[in-house]
Structures are given as structure tokens and as C-alpha cells.
Image 1 (cartoon, rainbow, N blue to C red):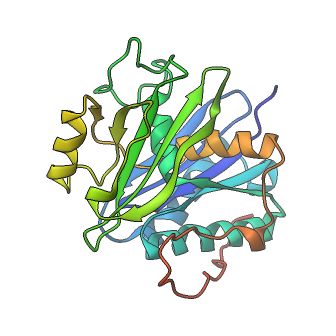
Image 2: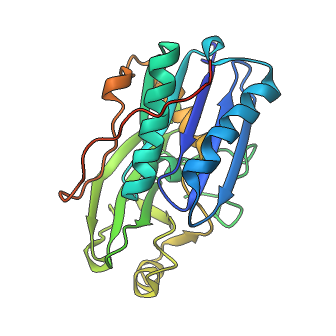
Length: 254
């Protein structure tokens, strides 16, 4: 099946990224880790990618964004930008779990190296029974977490082993088939890392949600008819104390 041409972004953590997936499978990406400035960075990233590929939004088949869970401000930025682009170009949107995107990076094939610290072998990327626990920092002494696996026959379709949740680090409970864990919340909670490693799980270090993963997961969602209109491209905060929905960003992209 021919791949859809996708633009994807993620600003759900301190990492800010944009990626362009073309129909031949080539992915171009911009990625930076910074505590602030995502709103100023993301549109220039998109402009650069489109100019580099010699295309416009109207040449694409769809959009994708990391819909969370994650930081409130970052999720509002991504949703607002994607809504603005989708309204302007009339494109469908794939809202992708930011946690599932990290799990995808752990399990992606060696031909697309994303986590050199992750072990291969019986519990490696090729095993359909191998699950991944993802824990991203939620501030307030809590983490966002969930467990996923990917079937080799459908490597871009996350299978949820434990639904997304938020809570203190001692509330994290890996699903029975989980063999690896990742996410930016691990390093911030040493007791959690120690508990998981003592249970025999392997730590895949240095992974953030990334737009290239969002693009591949989002492309599959659109292929399956799971895209949404611009108005429905909303963040998933998980926490109840959430502010008003984001406004679509005003952009000059076409």
C-alpha cells in the first residue's frame, strides 16, 4: 500500500519536533530539546521542511500531532498549529498518543535506529509479546504512563496493554508482558527506575516523543479511516484541571 504524504509535529514535552513523511517512505525531521520556545520554533520547522521538499500543504494527504498526554502549554501549541493548518488546507488529522510514539521508537526496526541502548533478541523489536512501558514527566511529582506493544505484522498500530494514566511514580504498574521501559519521566524519578530494573526490565534511555514516530503512526491511522476534522483535533490532558480548548493558530502556510 502506498504511504500517505504526512506532516507531523510534537510539542508535548521539552522536545519540539516536526517531520515530513513522503510516499516513498522518506522522512525529513527537525528536532530540538529546549525548556521553552516551542511556539516560536515549530512554524519555522514546518516552513523549512516544506521548502526542503519543494511542496506545499495542499500537496499532502494528511496531518498528525502528538495529542498528549503531556504539558498543557505544549499540547495547546501543537493542537492550535495543527488546527490552523488543517482548516487552511482542508486536511484530515491523526491525533497520536505521545506515549505510544515513544513506545514505537523503542520497537522500531534496527534499520531506523532510535534507541541504541535497547536490547535485541527474544524480547527485542521482533517479538510480538514484548511490551513497552512509557513514563513521561507530568510535573507535580507525577508521571503520565501507559504500556504498549506492536505486532510485527502491523508495526505502526499500537496495541494498548495498559491505558494512559497519570499518578505518582509508585502507581506505575507494568503489564505482565512488558520487558522494556522508556520516557523522560524515568530519569526524574530514580526510585521508579530502580524498581523497574529490579523487576528485570531494560531501560531504553534518552527517548522523547518525536514527530517522525507521530508521522508513521498517524499515517496508519488515516489509512484505517481514524482521522478527524480540524475542529476535533484536540489535546488529551488526562488531568481534570484543564484550561479552555486551544484556538487554531493563524499561519501563512499554504
